[in-house]
Image (cartoon, rainbow, N blue to C red; front, side):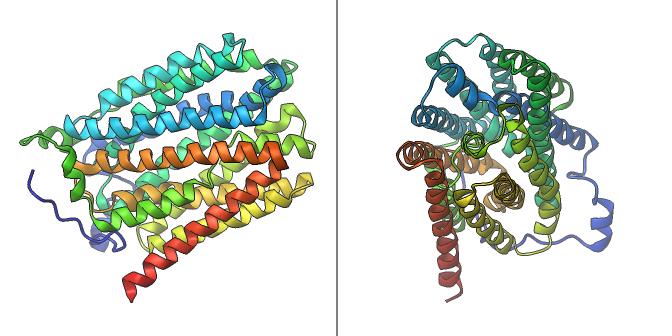
Length: 419
């Protein structure tokens, strides 16, 4: 493969003319089939997220109250499962570049997620839940990096922030809908966990059906057939700006331990078990409401400045949750977390993939997911340990420290670049 030149990640790509912007203001590509595929991916994400949150909004309480798992065991289990997911993302991303195809990986991962949804309702032990959760996260890993790469393939480069923002908004709205639906089912069934688990499989099936019917390969996939063999050493073609961004984001991920800790904090404060999924829904509604406008703004303004503001919001959110001892403070802290996620989740992917060529997009996302997986494994294990020793508030104190460190590293890189 010939050497690929990748411009600095901090510089916005060349802008379209006002006339072109008007023509493409509601599109992510020049092709109607690709626009349909992009919307199909976005709605697929909505329903798979709905399914996930129906389960995971109540899973920590099910593990602790029904199966008797400790907080440390929950954190370690979640960390291992998520770490495995990110490892799968790494290899799926690399292979999707090697074979120049995305949809088969997305289809395999979505099918696996649907099948695991059928196992949660019959779980009778912590070990069974662990292996089911492990298989589910592997399935998510197989589809995630190729999905992100396909979105980058489908989205016009000048509207990639908007494209990732829209997909992130629908994904998060699905999470809010799933958490809300779990609450309704729990209240109407006198906390029947297994009924909620069974219901989650319906949304997973809808996600799989949308993928099969509506999503097609991008034009780039059809035209960029491999002329030379993809090699692992091609990773060195990724620009230094990518690695700097990756370092900042990886440090940030050490503060992003699992959302499973939020219901545990809320329950300690006094929230009822049936209402706990509403906390996740509240956070995700804010996340979804912010994601698309921020993605749109990121196509016009400095992406690094927006990312920095979102990271500062993360520090404040952790500090509020650390001190929260009332329902009102817990709502404020969780709302700030939603604001942080909406400001950064799509933006992180937009920054990472900016000016990365088609041949290396899956690889770039794969490496990002591997680094994030290792960081989140450490974060969940540490958060569980801190919670068991000093209480759940200590987990959020640790998160504030790592988030602040990530802000400092981003400032340091910018100072060196402008020196």
